Length: 202
Image (cartoon, rainbow, N blue to C red; front, side, top):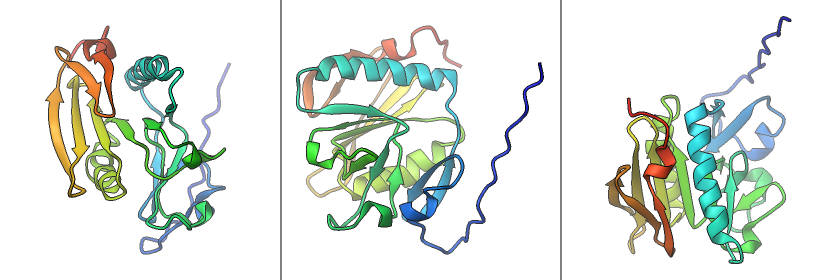
């Protein structure tokens, strides 16, 4: 049986235009907005999916009965300097791989309006620049308290924590030999080796 290849019809993007959620709502594919610039999101690899699922399961089990909730992509996070801004007018709409929200007033049916307490991005070759630069700066600017960058092929986890002056400080770089904790949940522990189990390091 032949399976046809689906070709997405990409929009004509104007390089100097600042797009909003309203602009991209009906575009084909998964899109993120960072300071008004649209980015098309590729489908994740098997390794990416496995790490995401394992970390999601660990957090879901830990947060059961607590006030916080963990979410996984695709689910939007809207970030704005103004609490009064309508979601449709937001110029920042990202889909972190995993994130935790402890303020239920931020949670909408279509996404989360405001910074999560914790975000993890799982790096792939196609997203490394965006994750390390654009999303790093975005999460720092809008006050995400803790940001993890997980590198599947190097099998490392970089952890950044927001300092009192509003800038990220790198807490450390962790490998499969280490135990992981989240600053807001000191009693949550995870052996890093469990994230990468079954996948040899390149």
